[in-house]
Length: 455
Image (cartoon, rainbow, N blue to C red; front, side, top):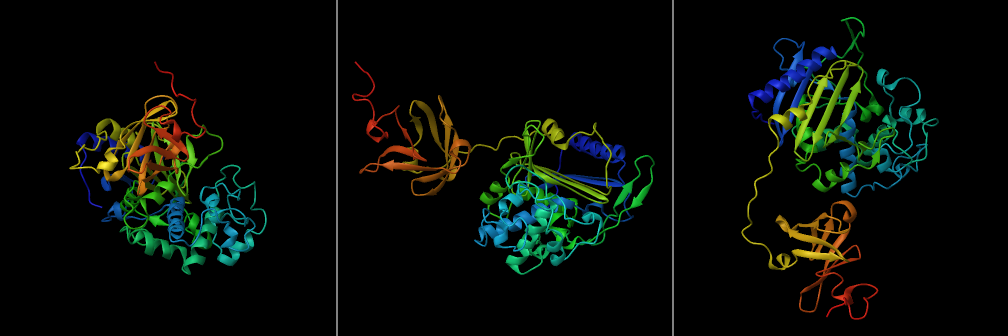
């Protein structure tokens, strides 16, 4: 990605935020990046780096951010017709003690599967191979009824990596590299560290001394947290999450992954899980991404998809100290360089039959207004009553699919008379007419004889 410029005031405040996080957090080294509209517009590095080494080229282990790549690999297989999200994992990965748990439930951490693999502390131990993985999880890995609640599961993603391998006949990380990383130009994201790479450290909680952390190859547990990456590569991944998917994944599938599915237990509903991503509502914005930690490392990927803005961070400490007075880069951008709305441009012409659909429509006595958007999309806005607003994407001749709220996934169909004029709209069997309950002959159940009282 090429760089772009921010205002000097913005840059100074972002640099200050990084400096505070590194100093107050007592972090050996820290690199941050800000992405807007697919561009890495700011980066900052603080701490100790080898001489003549560009901090932006230094790899850090990104831990559980790895899960987002595995999730995209699973969605690519779904889009290719190789699996269904509602399919039990046992249909593709035999021998698991949670064979009835669906692929979607593993992606959303709602499968009731244990957080870790029974046995040694997996992050600090040499990883098992596939046989060892299945032997170790034979008992003690089913903790709750599937779908009951969110319970974060590294084991669940190890099994999803096994799923990818079985359906492609290749190691999961090769699939991720060839089908996701390479097309996106993420050449510095790898399964094992490639120099220059950071050394992970434990920082003593009561003294300013460091202890190098051992680096383990997680092997079959790798899909839960194996990958190494850099800030520019994570910036490209942030652009992907913001919608710049290239040829890797369809926008519809990405949207599906980023939809909140299940709330994390013990919070007010502001923190939820999607298909491989975490979605957090914070200070009025919806942030999609994931965190990551492995011994000696922490990483963060946060994307405001509404403004196509992302914030990424990598550091080489097992635990970073609190830095509460460090400004959030999102807040800095909101204050210094707020996102302006895209410029409005008139269209040269619009289809006559679609223009004829615009204007007021009534769902019973509730009124809405239908607007025509570019590319044949429709926007239904509520005027009064219980009319649910929604945006509709065209799917065929006289049909659209709803994208929001009550009408999400429902089909809007234009019903026409013998002369081609629209008599009413059908949205998932609900009838919308030009006037309240008129014409009465299209309303199921009929209307009172004589219609509305008139003089």
